[in-house]
Image 1 (cartoon, rainbow, N blue to C red):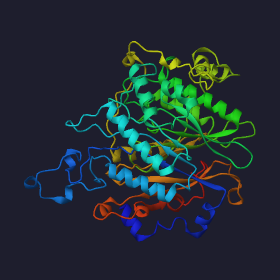
Image 2 (image 1 turned 180 degrees about the horizontal axis):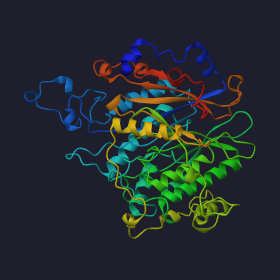
Image 3 (image 1 turned 180 degrees about the vertical axis):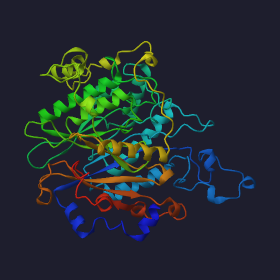
Image 4 (image 1 turned 60 degrees about the vertical axis):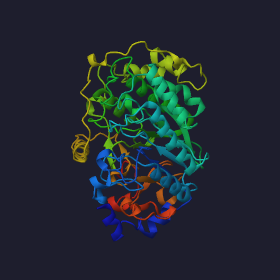
Length: 497
């Protein structure tokens, strides 16, 4: 269907001359969101789909060539990305985008799936696949463009299992990922990443008036229902709660430095993906800074970028009324206990702020070991792991989230939008997004603050034709559509959504 639409040229106009002129202004910057590369060096051209594209059949046993894999991947099958697809993607990005974007958001899952019993996946293999992905992006964009990596649920071993900070398996995973990514985690954030798998990085500066964008790469494994190694976000020693505290601290630092924020993660926040207390905790924390700010308001979160679902979607996020105004607090102070600890830099979270989270102290307190894993099965809101998502389930979840926002009375003013990018993995055809954002105030968008997302284009690769005849490097991906054309809106601010 996607390529039938592209062939009609209805969507390929990219907003017409007026839209292109506005987005080609010097006041507009660009960045790429790429996700779920799922590198598989075991992939074989001519293999069967039911072998996860790992084994070539004997000629006498298989006569239907149409069901065999191709050089660049097998659409509509449970197969991962061949190295040929990763190389072609890297070459295309280098040719077409290396001089046109300000930064790259890379939201995890570079390891292949662990679905072939004859090729069981190990952590060492996952690390190697992350190194291949990182090298391909480095080849595409060089060392001058910031690339912000992220931990996905297929970047840990076993699949969907990641113990809390301090556990030897978590420490080993974070250290090896940081090494595989080859310096993409800033040196002053290594202690934080080695501790919890999350970190901050400054991206683009605004050319006028100071400030700029800072990325928070969050570890969604500590909120994800399917990760049985951690619980919810109510316990004082919860890894998920510690990460919420870190986000709140980063919000305060961004305010002090005059910077706005971009959040990027792997698993998108919704009530099916996150444990209830983590979902509501994330909504509450983020909702404090997604509305248009006043003179003394916190910084704006201009983007919340996620992957994992392998589909092209967006959703509203916002707190439920019961979580927007917490109970058991004094009338003059509506903060929760952990929010006060962060703000006043005291207690456990004060120790983290002055210790492992501090840029000034790199004394590897993250080396502290946890002798035994906690029995999180006794904790609150430990719902059973989610079943594997299928497109129908995803659409139902999305529509339920839309309805929750639309039917809310009164409507909560603090809403944000998460964007879920399509994936490079061949199953639904490889794709990525190019976002356009406002670098500085412009007459065409004088009502919008710098950093606001303006539009995005989705680019995709037609493997059905590419596997028959390899295209030139600059023709491997083509633009499928522009968001503003399809939805008929002028920008990607929350008000426009």
